[in-house]
Length: 191
View 1: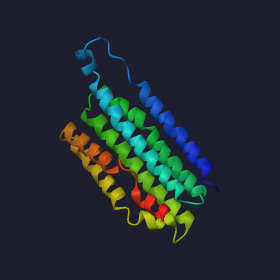
View 2: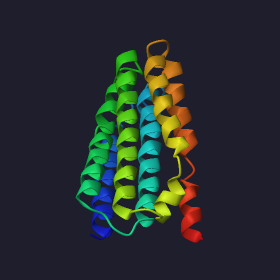
View 3: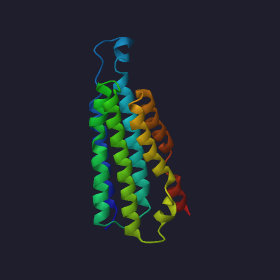
View 4: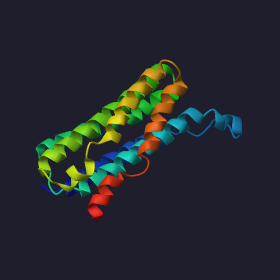
């Protein structure tokens, strides 16, 4: 199977996820900075989640440009990733509506961690589908960054119960770590 359809489908799902999150942004009920300032949790949560969806879209794009074929296992692994990402609008809204309260913040981290784990499973399915010696296998290597992300999400979930700022700080740290596209794949494709 070609990668074109899975990439187009995934692009569409990610676009819908961003749209749903954008619909949660409501105009303030006043025309001054005080009314605008009351919206900070919603805006901050939206920005963080938008960045995460952008990171996944960008890395998903690079991932599928580095492979030549997909199979049924890859299709299901991709659906698993999209499922967890589709929960981001819910988790984002719950977290922002409750001003980054402990449980919504921890659940948000759980969704992020599940998406990271699903991405790891997708990479493994793609590696199996490509066989040994593929560009992807060479590029991914030991995937230290991916594994560190899961550990940091766990720390963020636990940190959420200590302090919302601590939990959110871990989630922001992971986003900053992944903000630059995965250059391992770009380097291998250019070679």
